[in-house]
Amino acid sequence: MKDGDIDAVVSRSPALEILNIQGSMKGVHLRLLSHSLRCVQICSFVIESVNVVNAPRLERLILSECLNPAGGSCIRVKIGNVPKLKVFGFLEPGKYVLEIQDTVIMAGIKTSASMMVTSVNVLSMKVRFGVYDDVIKMVPAFLKCFPNVEALHITSEKCDQLAGKFDLKFWEEVGLIVSVLLRLKVITFREYRARQDELAFLQYILQHAMVLKYAVVQMVNPKFTSLSVDEMAYTIDNMQPPKNKKWASTVGLLTMGTHGPEGGETWTFRKGADLSDDDPIAPVKFIIRVAGPATCQHKSRAAKHRN
Image (tube, rainbow, N blue to C red):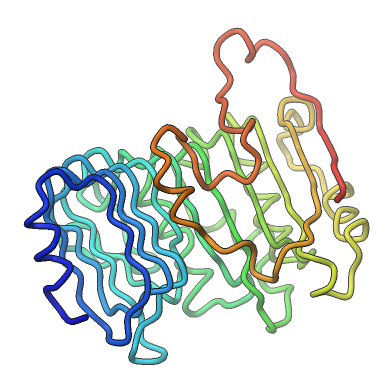
């Protein structure tokens, strides 16, 4: 497969709504223009860049396990005209370079309206907590580009660097993140290893997300860590209470284990292609039922589950 092949297929398919791409022996530059596409999923694909130029009906863009043929080089993801984009994943700081309109998103950049994708309400990221230079400093920058995110799904990638540098103070100093402060209703955190930097991020969310309703923490398979599920869950149960102590009675907290592979389950096209599912990335389906006026009057109880 070479540059232009997929672009040509899309341009000649005016009724195409779902585009699934997997596998390639040569890196390509993908450029998408389509008035019919609603879902694009690119999985385990060798690619150099993805440029969504104009896709007015696109609702979800999923990038999973993509590879750049140039080894350590980053994959460029450019977002153009996507007024209906709702679901975006899996952003990986340090692996993808995000460009919105004509602006490359960098750490510390002052976010302007032209750099925001306001339609996205479900965002998924894979993060190597503990890696500062090309990862952690980009997480706040990415989050600020999606101010209306209501469901944030984080997967913690394996990191051999020692924890401890990125405490709660680090996150409090990153500046205002509108989506976290005013919009976030659901946070899920998968592959939790009980690292201090992971815990600090969770504390930050619980402390600052004013309308948070549900928090789900899924422990990494204990086969891949020296801690048991109960030991990892203990760090959550005994987490230092945030300044906003109301979270304990208003947020439904679920901790759970897994027997799955390290890094989590492999993404499947079937999940993303089900357009009736508002949040195909959520690991627990009941959490996507956003509380309405009636249920908001009742306080959620913390729940715990061990597999």
